[in-house]
Length: 419
Image (cartoon, rainbow, N blue to C red; front, side):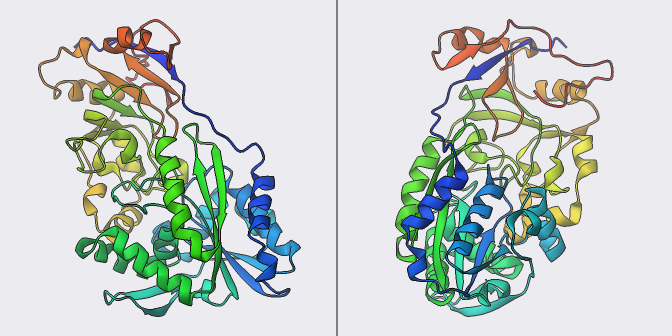
């Protein structure tokens, strides 16, 4: 088989960026006049989740520092549903991976998986709330706002969802994901979050939006009554600033790595075009990719391979690196076990690409449309097959960095670790 030759391109995305995240965090919190609502000596629980958010350690520390300046006693609550294997130790380890430690942030971190019940929604759903957070005088929610990998609506991944899945811990995540089967995501988010705001002493929140370069683009503080409105506005910006593949059609997409810090589904379905269906795009959804090949898991995912089921093929080393129990807990809790299903896997890149090229239809392998990315957070530079060359040269937002050359397999049949 003659493999397609590839060349590298650099994409140009809109690049709104916060120059100093600590200073901007302080300004946003000062704008909320929180000192008028927090008395000296009161405790404030600050949420920290499991996503790999740019600059998150500095943002969280700046939130901690702000509350210290007004005389409060802040502490951090691990707020990440069932992640980390659904254990206190696992969730504390995830935070440490991001540099969120007691030493760096200068305050305690609490990661108990215990919850209390704040009440029951109109749908009859018990509202689980982290016991650690319930023991604070105030709760302040911090999270990134972005399109969800599976769910649609005016509210997706952000501050409102953090009050459900994050602060709901494992028990809350289980019941809420079950509820998504019978009710719309929007309805359950609004219903549960409203109960949390009313009964959980929520002081406010800080929404984070990132640009396509995995940088902090915007920080926005909000008081409880403004959380929903602000999140809708931030979601509009988050959609606009998402990274994207350079071309809307591909026979094969090579993905160097997937992981929970990259996306809840390991790879962002908004980027690869599989938000509606697990192995194909919806009628109006782009890009349209025939086959996805996953090459590795990130170190920070700690074996959680949730999302591997979105791919048609992977390397055997991905399966070997999987922590089956952690992956299954996460995917079953989410109500979508298919994302943990293991695809056909092969030892080397040469072999898996060879097999995949034989499944894309009548197109000759040497003319196949192949795109190769590091992960769905980093798509600034992409390796593309020669079939895209002329189209790339005609695009003002793409810079062709080199002429086509053979895929760089080593003697053992592997490609480099990262594109």
